[in-house]
Amino acid sequence: MAAVAPSGPEELFMVEHRLLATSEPELKLVQQVLVEVSQRFTSRGVPMRYLGSAFLPGRERLLSLFAAASISDVRGRAAS
Image 1 (tube, one colour):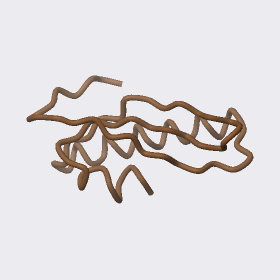
Image 2 (tube, one colour; image 1 turned 180 degrees about the horizontal axis):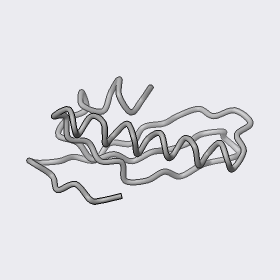
Image 3 (cartoon, helix red, strand yellow; image 1 turned 45 degrees about the horizontal axis):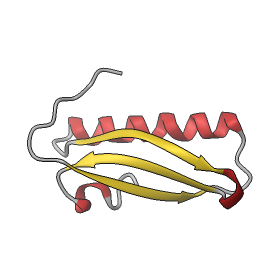
Image 4 (cartoon, one colour; image 1 turned 135 degrees about the horizontal axis):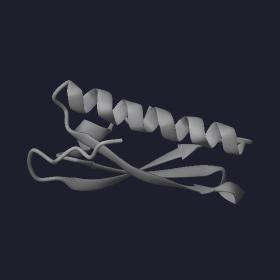
């Protein structure tokens, strides 16, 4: 994946996803989808970078970190 240079000021946003009974292959697929979503919105003029995730198996949560200009750029896109 090629790095996308920010076009303006960025902030960091953490998105929490609830994942029930998730296997390692499913986690890899979710990560791939998050990368593709951020690339798609960047190509459409809404710069957003997916920086990575941490899975908390005991709590069945995936915490994903994004860089974007505002929360409204992340909300409804990466959070779905």
